[in-house]
Image (cartoon, rainbow, N blue to C red; front, side, top):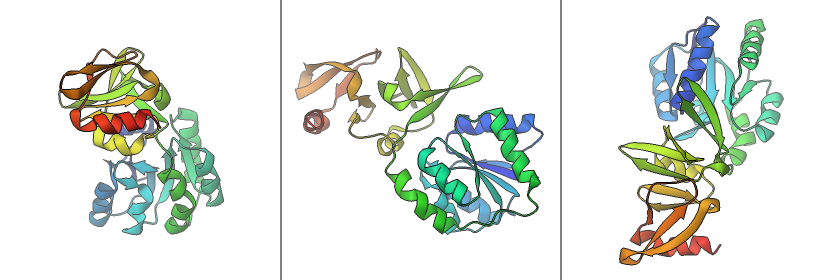
Length: 247
């Protein structure tokens, strides 16, 4: 069986890779964006099976199939269940909810092995069923790595995101975790009613702001629960920040 993984979160992709390897399946490639996937399909024979994340960093994965039309079977991986599951069942397409567990993965692979031919499905029809839900749905959780283990953290419990030393981190309960996304990526993934980008280097969660003090140059110094990093609202963002606070 020739399989590939399309997943924008590299820790999640590596985690799925290890689970597949434990079951004797060796994916031939891991792809991390719509652009990268389209280019790969144009240059390589299509695989038998695709493990496909719905929401990629540069768009929804259905955009891949608007440019290339592989006949591969697909097992979707997604953190979104309510609307997605209805659509997947309607189209007889299998899915795995994140965080993926070994039992569900085995069951999905067994289902694939039982099929004599790939499931026929219409990418445009499926996209029309889901696109509005995904475009309007903000990130609900993040996957982080702790040693050799993975952990999911609900977005609402993250006090802030910040960049330093050329990396991006989320802060949760007095601990920081590196993540793959940039702050630019996160801006479109986070609910603007809850999160605000105060500067080039930080995004804060309204629920965790404990105090706001004046700072030099007409800026603000934020005291955010569970965060030791200095968080300063940049001069260019001060007016927008005050407007956001009053919503």
